[in-house]
Length: 218
Image (cartoon, rainbow, N blue to C red):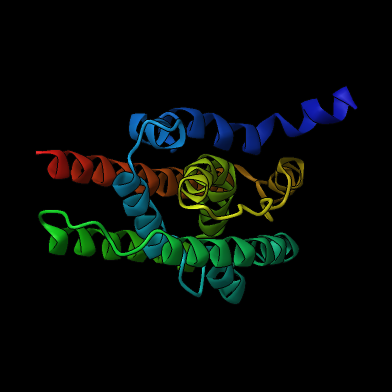
Protein backbone atom coordinates (compact mmCIF):
# COMPACT_ATOMS: atom_id res chain seq x y z
CA UNK A 1 0.00 0.00 0.00
CA UNK A 2 2.78 2.44 0.84
CA UNK A 3 4.46 1.74 -2.50
CA UNK A 4 1.25 2.44 -4.39
CA UNK A 5 0.80 5.69 -2.50
CA UNK A 6 4.36 6.73 -3.32
CA UNK A 7 3.67 6.10 -7.01
CA UNK A 8 0.68 8.43 -7.19
CA UNK A 9 2.42 11.08 -5.13
CA UNK A 10 5.15 11.41 -7.74
CA UNK A 11 5.24 12.63 -11.32
CA UNK A 12 2.71 14.91 -13.00
CA UNK A 13 0.10 14.80 -10.25
CA UNK A 14 2.69 15.61 -7.60
CA UNK A 15 3.68 18.67 -9.61
CA UNK A 16 0.05 19.81 -9.91
CA UNK A 17 -0.54 19.43 -6.17
CA UNK A 18 2.75 21.12 -5.24
CA UNK A 19 1.82 24.02 -7.48
CA UNK A 20 -1.55 24.20 -5.74
CA UNK A 21 0.21 24.33 -2.40
CA UNK A 22 1.81 27.64 -3.36
CA UNK A 23 -0.47 29.11 -6.04
CA UNK A 24 -3.86 27.58 -5.33
CA UNK A 25 -6.80 28.57 -3.16
CA UNK A 26 -5.70 26.94 0.09
CA UNK A 27 -2.69 29.19 0.79
CA UNK A 28 -4.64 32.34 -0.08
CA UNK A 29 -5.17 34.31 3.16
CA UNK A 30 -8.77 35.24 2.41
CA UNK A 31 -9.69 31.68 1.47
CA UNK A 32 -8.30 30.58 4.83
CA UNK A 33 -10.22 33.34 6.60
CA UNK A 34 -13.48 32.31 4.97
CA UNK A 35 -13.00 28.62 5.66
CA UNK A 36 -11.72 29.17 9.17
CA UNK A 37 -14.83 30.88 10.45
CA UNK A 38 -13.45 34.41 10.73
CA UNK A 39 -15.75 35.73 8.00
CA UNK A 40 -19.10 37.36 8.50
CA UNK A 41 -22.29 36.29 6.75
CA UNK A 42 -21.93 38.87 3.98
CA UNK A 43 -18.42 37.67 3.10
CA UNK A 44 -19.60 34.07 2.95
CA UNK A 45 -22.65 34.98 0.88
CA UNK A 46 -20.44 36.95 -1.52
CA UNK A 47 -18.07 34.00 -1.85
CA UNK A 48 -20.87 31.56 -2.65
CA UNK A 49 -22.27 33.82 -5.38
CA UNK A 50 -18.83 34.43 -6.89
CA UNK A 51 -17.91 30.74 -6.95
CA UNK A 52 -21.32 29.98 -8.44
CA UNK A 53 -20.74 32.59 -11.16
CA UNK A 54 -17.47 30.94 -12.13
CA UNK A 55 -18.24 27.25 -11.65
CA UNK A 56 -22.01 26.95 -11.29
CA UNK A 57 -23.01 26.97 -14.95
CA UNK A 58 -23.18 24.37 -17.70
CA UNK A 59 -21.13 23.28 -19.48
CA UNK A 60 -18.52 22.91 -16.77
CA UNK A 61 -14.81 22.62 -17.35
CA UNK A 62 -14.83 18.83 -17.61
CA UNK A 63 -18.03 18.80 -19.69
CA UNK A 64 -16.51 21.13 -22.25
CA UNK A 65 -13.23 19.23 -22.38
CA UNK A 66 -15.13 15.95 -22.81
CA UNK A 67 -17.01 17.34 -25.80
CA UNK A 68 -13.76 18.56 -27.37
CA UNK A 69 -11.94 15.34 -26.45
CA UNK A 70 -8.55 16.63 -27.58
CA UNK A 71 -6.95 13.90 -25.45
CA UNK A 72 -9.12 10.78 -26.03
CA UNK A 73 -7.31 8.73 -23.38
CA UNK A 74 -8.69 11.16 -20.81
CA UNK A 75 -12.34 10.45 -21.66
CA UNK A 76 -13.11 8.04 -18.80
CA UNK A 77 -11.47 10.33 -16.24
CA UNK A 78 -13.26 13.38 -17.64
CA UNK A 79 -16.58 11.57 -17.41
CA UNK A 80 -15.94 10.84 -13.73
CA UNK A 81 -15.05 14.48 -13.07
CA UNK A 82 -18.08 15.75 -14.98
CA UNK A 83 -20.39 13.42 -13.07
CA UNK A 84 -18.91 14.36 -9.71
CA UNK A 85 -18.99 18.06 -10.47
CA UNK A 86 -22.66 17.88 -11.44
CA UNK A 87 -23.39 17.12 -7.79
CA UNK A 88 -21.10 19.94 -6.67
CA UNK A 89 -22.92 22.29 -9.03
CA UNK A 90 -26.26 21.30 -7.48
CA UNK A 91 -24.80 22.03 -4.04
CA UNK A 92 -23.66 25.45 -5.27
CA UNK A 93 -27.16 26.23 -6.54
CA UNK A 94 -28.68 25.20 -3.20
CA UNK A 95 -26.24 27.40 -1.32
CA UNK A 96 -26.76 30.38 -3.62
CA UNK A 97 -30.49 30.23 -2.87
CA UNK A 98 -29.89 29.87 0.89
CA UNK A 99 -27.45 32.77 1.34
CA UNK A 100 -29.73 35.38 -0.19
CA UNK A 101 -28.85 38.10 -2.70
CA UNK A 102 -25.35 39.28 -3.52
CA UNK A 103 -24.26 41.69 -0.76
CA UNK A 104 -24.40 45.35 -1.76
CA UNK A 105 -20.82 46.34 -2.57
CA UNK A 106 -19.22 49.30 -4.35
CA UNK A 107 -18.13 48.71 -7.96
CA UNK A 108 -20.56 45.83 -8.50
CA UNK A 109 -20.50 46.28 -12.27
CA UNK A 110 -16.71 45.84 -12.32
CA UNK A 111 -17.08 42.70 -10.21
CA UNK A 112 -19.56 41.21 -12.65
CA UNK A 113 -17.17 41.96 -15.51
CA UNK A 114 -14.30 40.29 -13.63
CA UNK A 115 -16.36 37.18 -12.93
CA UNK A 116 -17.42 36.93 -16.55
CA UNK A 117 -13.75 37.24 -17.50
CA UNK A 118 -12.76 34.44 -15.11
CA UNK A 119 -15.50 32.20 -16.46
CA UNK A 120 -14.40 32.92 -20.03
CA UNK A 121 -10.74 32.20 -19.22
CA UNK A 122 -11.67 28.83 -17.73
CA UNK A 123 -13.82 28.02 -20.76
CA UNK A 124 -10.86 28.77 -23.02
CA UNK A 125 -8.72 26.32 -21.06
CA UNK A 126 -11.36 23.63 -21.53
CA UNK A 127 -11.57 24.37 -25.25
CA UNK A 128 -7.82 24.44 -25.84
CA UNK A 129 -6.58 22.40 -28.78
CA UNK A 130 -3.21 21.96 -27.10
CA UNK A 131 -3.07 18.37 -25.87
CA UNK A 132 -2.79 18.36 -22.08
CA UNK A 133 -3.89 21.95 -21.44
CA UNK A 134 -7.48 21.12 -20.49
CA UNK A 135 -6.26 18.05 -18.64
CA UNK A 136 -3.97 20.19 -16.50
CA UNK A 137 -6.70 22.71 -15.76
CA UNK A 138 -9.09 19.98 -14.68
CA UNK A 139 -6.44 18.24 -12.58
CA UNK A 140 -5.86 21.58 -10.84
CA UNK A 141 -9.61 21.93 -10.28
CA UNK A 142 -9.65 18.50 -8.62
CA UNK A 143 -6.65 19.43 -6.46
CA UNK A 144 -8.02 22.88 -5.57
CA UNK A 145 -11.65 22.00 -5.02
CA UNK A 146 -11.24 20.74 -1.41
CA UNK A 147 -10.08 24.24 -0.38
CA UNK A 148 -13.04 25.83 -2.15
CA UNK A 149 -15.33 23.18 -0.67
CA UNK A 150 -14.23 24.20 2.83
CA UNK A 151 -15.43 27.73 2.11
CA UNK A 152 -18.74 26.41 0.77
CA UNK A 153 -19.18 24.10 3.74
CA UNK A 154 -18.52 26.97 6.13
CA UNK A 155 -21.24 28.95 4.36
CA UNK A 156 -23.55 25.95 4.55
CA UNK A 157 -22.99 25.74 8.29
CA UNK A 158 -23.60 29.48 8.71
CA UNK A 159 -26.84 29.45 6.70
CA UNK A 160 -28.28 26.16 7.92
CA UNK A 161 -27.71 24.01 4.84
CA UNK A 162 -26.75 20.34 5.14
CA UNK A 163 -23.48 19.92 3.25
CA UNK A 164 -23.40 16.71 1.19
CA UNK A 165 -20.27 14.60 0.93
CA UNK A 166 -18.03 15.64 -1.93
CA UNK A 167 -18.79 13.74 -5.12
CA UNK A 168 -15.43 14.43 -6.73
CA UNK A 169 -13.19 11.43 -7.55
CA UNK A 170 -10.63 10.50 -4.93
CA UNK A 171 -7.12 11.85 -5.28
CA UNK A 172 -5.47 8.56 -6.19
CA UNK A 173 -7.77 8.13 -9.21
CA UNK A 174 -6.71 11.47 -10.66
CA UNK A 175 -3.08 10.73 -9.85
CA UNK A 176 -3.27 7.46 -11.76
CA UNK A 177 -4.85 9.22 -14.72
CA UNK A 178 -2.18 11.92 -14.68
CA UNK A 179 0.57 9.32 -14.78
CA UNK A 180 -0.98 7.93 -17.96
CA UNK A 181 -1.98 11.22 -19.59
CA UNK A 182 1.28 13.10 -19.00
CA UNK A 183 3.16 10.63 -21.17
CA UNK A 184 5.55 13.00 -22.95
CA UNK A 185 7.48 16.13 -21.96
CA UNK A 186 5.35 18.22 -24.34
CA UNK A 187 2.11 17.04 -22.76
CA UNK A 188 3.55 17.51 -19.27
CA UNK A 189 4.35 21.12 -20.17
CA UNK A 190 0.81 21.62 -21.43
CA UNK A 191 -0.61 20.09 -18.24
CA UNK A 192 1.60 22.41 -16.22
CA UNK A 193 0.38 25.42 -18.18
CA UNK A 194 -3.28 24.48 -17.79
CA UNK A 195 -2.87 23.91 -14.06
CA UNK A 196 -1.07 27.23 -13.56
CA UNK A 197 -3.80 29.11 -15.41
CA UNK A 198 -6.61 27.49 -13.41
CA UNK A 199 -4.89 28.26 -10.11
CA UNK A 200 -4.37 31.86 -11.26
CA UNK A 201 -8.10 32.24 -11.88
CA UNK A 202 -8.93 30.88 -8.44
CA UNK A 203 -6.43 33.13 -6.70
CA UNK A 204 -7.81 36.07 -8.65
CA UNK A 205 -11.26 35.13 -7.43
CA UNK A 206 -10.18 35.25 -3.79
CA UNK A 207 -8.30 38.50 -4.41
CA UNK A 208 -11.56 39.94 -5.70
CA UNK A 209 -13.56 38.65 -2.73
CA UNK A 210 -11.02 40.11 -0.32
CA UNK A 211 -11.17 43.47 -2.07
CA UNK A 212 -14.97 43.45 -1.93
CA UNK A 213 -14.93 42.60 1.76
CA UNK A 214 -12.64 45.57 2.42
CA UNK A 215 -14.87 47.86 0.35
CA UNK A 216 -17.91 46.88 2.41
CA UNK A 217 -16.00 47.56 5.62
CA UNK A 218 -14.99 51.11 4.60
